Image (tube, rainbow, N blue to C red; front, side):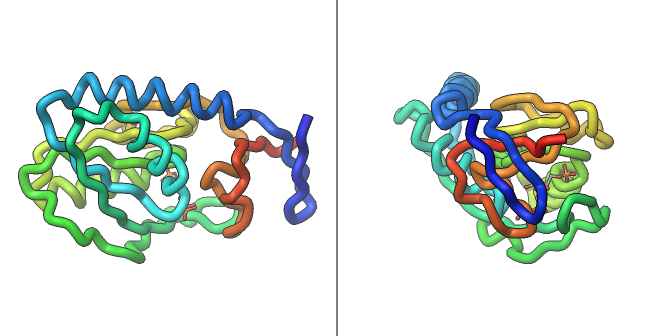
Length: 181
Ligand code: PRP
């Protein structure tokens, strides 16, 4: 079993690259079915979602015409939430009348998605769905933030790798690691 040590915490491999690839494929398949004849705009929430987004869009049915843009917000530092959503990179693309798919690495309390959905609606998006690699249903505080496409559900554990960080580090790991008790 692979382990990683970061800032005095030990993390154990939880999802291998092969398991992740399988999860990504099933999400891509569902999106490809649901968006036939549409031209979705993927809004990727930096930084964490860039790895998942990169894999996800390449697994879509090639018949799906889509565009991609990025937004950067921040609500976390270390292991605890500040409860504040800060817009660091604002939306660059017009979302008016677009079917938007927000791409996340993890949906936790749902605060980020809750606020982003309101933001996108205010900018004229005709629909807003959410695709996330990981979802913590036990932590969800905002009902409208429940993701539509989920790679894998997890309980309330701290995870790193595959885009997810620990104070900025570990995003490069190709597996997902869980903190060891
Ligand atoms: C993480 C994650 C989501 C958000 C989820 O972002 O990428 O955007 O927290 O938490 P929530 O559901 O409670 O809002 P973070 O602020 O850590 O930034 P990062 O993507 O740059 O790591």
